[in-house]
Amino acid sequence: MNDPTPLPPEAVEALLTDTSPYLSCDDCFATIDVYVERLAADPGHRDVAMETHLAGCGACAEEARTLLDLLAGS
Ligand SMILES: [Zn+2]
Image 1 (tube, protein in one colour):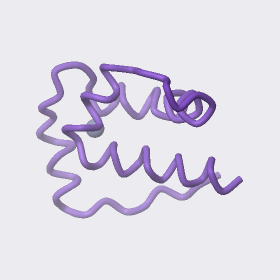
Image 2 (cartoon, protein in one colour; image 1 turned 90 degrees about the horizontal axis):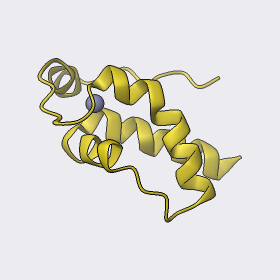
Image 3 (cartoon, helix red, strand yellow; image 1 turned 30 degrees about the vertical axis):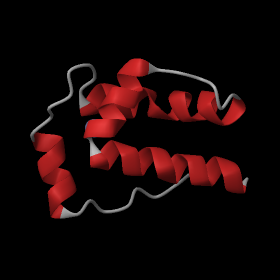
Image 4 (cartoon, protein in one colour; image 1 turned 90 degrees about the vertical axis):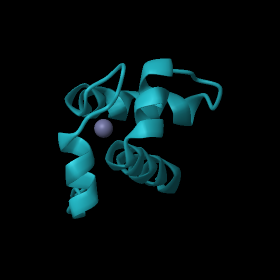
C-alpha cells in the first residue's frame, strides 16, 4: 500500500548497529503497524518496548511517523 522510503546511509547503519535493549528492528517492523494503529486509536496507548526502540532507532521512528501520517491523512 505504501512504498517504503529508501533509507539514508545513516539509517542503514542504525539498522546494522541495533542498540535496542528491547526490540530488534525486525521485531519492531513486525509490530510497528499494530502499535501505530493502537496509538492512533488511543493517544494514551503505551508500549514501553516499542517506545524505547523508537527513541533509540531513527529508522523505525521515521517509519512510525510515516505510518501515523498515513493514518491521520485517511
Ligand atoms: Zn529499529
